[in-house]
Amino acid sequence: MQSHGRVRVRPLRLAVLLGIGLAGFLIVVGCSANRMVFQPSTTMEASPAALKRPHEDVFFTAADGTRLNGWFFPANTNVVILVCHGNAGNLSHRLSLIETLLKANASVFAFDYRGYGRSSGKPSEEGVCLDAEAAWQWLVNERGFAPTSIVALGESLGGGVVCELATRKPLRALILQSTFTSVPDLASEMLPWLPMRLLLTTRFNNHDKLKQVRIPVLILHGRKDTIIPFAHAEKNYAALSAHSRYFAELDGDHNDTLIVGAEKYQQAVAAFLGMVRP
Image (cartoon, rainbow, N blue to C red):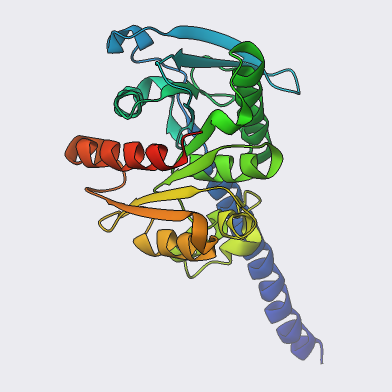
């Protein structure tokens, strides 16, 4: 009888150990996935002077006291583009984007989220959204832009930031460049064998928020995007009100569209600004 009891106990112990191991593995995967959402660099590899245009290198403060850094490039226009960049690198890696937007006849204010470049703090979903609010506030309070003159542009992950900003602050329009429907949607496609929707704490549910947006939105996305599939752009477009949505296809992959298709990008943005300009 004792021998039979031991045989019954061992499989139970093995199952418990396997369960603990699986839970530990999933926790590690979830933590790693959340950390991968934000990949900041604190090394500044260029300065705004490289564009040889008038500019201001400014510091401002988020509502929770986090000190942030941004570059403002004025232009002879009543529209300013507030740039919320992607998840990797920092502001110094966006000079090509800034230059392209300036050619589209708009002032540009690009900034680094907390933990990126010379901005202090550590990034999180709520934290970077507070940072975007602070950048919006700087444009209104320090440079006197009307909220209806601010066009928020989100690059990749930044699309999640500007979609949230649109729920908190008035804006003229949104531009979403190579943006996903949500972080869990994208992660589930990348790792379909794991319960990523349960593991991820970072959400950025852009698709749901876009259903509530009532300002003009331009979606820019390439069919050759190997990081965020084109289907995400199609779903986001479908979520928008039909009278205020615009779409332009980009050339190239996720990270090289401004190398292989800068002129096409600039023309699409310029045409959109022409339609929404106050």
